[in-house]
Image (cartoon, rainbow, N blue to C red):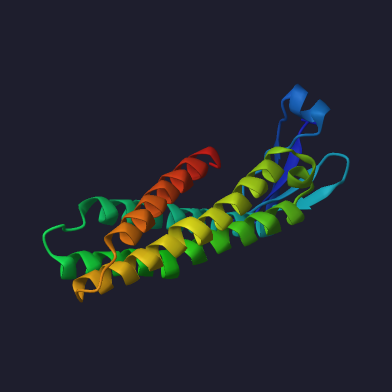
Length: 193
């Protein structure tokens, strides 16, 4: 019918008509699928295929963040306590996961999130993307300051303990900070979904 949106079907190279809910049309809201170009009846066009690619990158980064947090939590909870050398190896593994998976994945999430906001007027004008942006920055700072730094410190201190030169008090403090930081990042991740 006359009321609707025209959606570019990439697979078939044609426009498809889809009816809009009357409220969505009145509010100017258009919910198109990623990978499509949506044209509202007034002639305004939004290129969503770029946004779709950025959103895919954003989702892949989020998977990396959640996977890294889960891996760090599992390793921290199951680290062997009967062998200092084994414990030091697990602590080093947590530090490497933080360095090579958690921080880069979170950077991808932040950058792709900002690009998605910039690419879509719908995101620019909505409040929730900006709230997610602020939470994402808080997550990045928290990850760098608590999880990443504490993981490196705990790895260094546990390696020193395995070599017979450890400081148990400093290690306990680093572990407490890291554990609290990991759970704080898990909560922020859940809120940011």
